[in-house]
Length: 341
Image 1 (tube, helix red, strand yellow):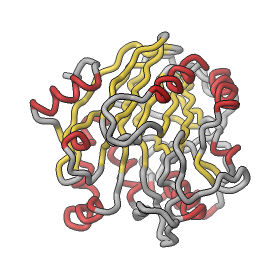
Image 2 (cartoon, one colour; image 1 turned 30 degrees about the vertical axis):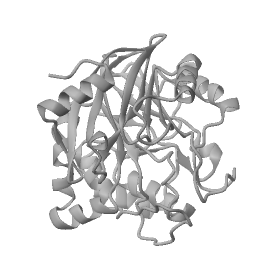
Image 3 (spheres, helix red, strand yellow; image 1 turned 135 degrees about the horizontal axis):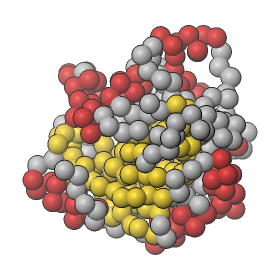
Image 4 (spheres, one colour; image 1 turned 90 degrees about the horizontal axis):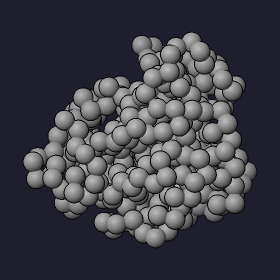
């Protein structure tokens, strides 16, 4: 069972909401923990990390939810996430009841109840370091963090300031300390960069190596998720390759990319693994390359990724489901990793 560590102080009301929302679940929201906390309580073992791409619950996906319900929408993820010690993805829309849209072309919002269903289906942490997390303003971002925390999920790459957003989160899984960091490496349209207001963690090359080093000092494994690249491009850009390798060189073992909305190859680099884009996971795009997708399942031991496999999926009417034979072949050819049985 995933055991995160909390240092963030919550209001009495928020704690009550979280206990009600996930009475039968271990809480999964964390910030910095004391070095070595809970180490030695269980023997260290390799863990299963399952990662997916972009989650959207607005636009065409909202219509599906209204017709069939959230549980139906997410049913295809329950089995592939069921054995994960740690499951994470990228949440592409604020969870808020506020309707205060930013002045930009694509503006999303979804209901806070989504958080509970995402926890129930098997997720443990979600990245908010993307170009849509502030679509409903900075208060909308805080609402999103509160909704995730209340459901027992870890919100990654967001905070009440840039400094807080850049902090790593520590969890315990399989007797290992796992550090999680999340960044956005593209321009966030309509949102000025301000250090001291609620924000997504914007990648800053002059500080990222020190941030990863701080995480590594407290953890057995460092995982970075990053929002980058060019939409619908089948291959990672030179900039993605440069940044991804820089993150591994700085001390990360696993780098998980999203934003292009299509799958891109997985690369082994100096003992680490870079998944340049995990495509869509729940989305309403009708392009075949946006509907062919996969979860990446990695077996992770202290300071190394032992192996990775792809769990191919196919998105139909916004719903992820087991891939057809053709879609399995397409996913395998793109990702260049073995397929899970």
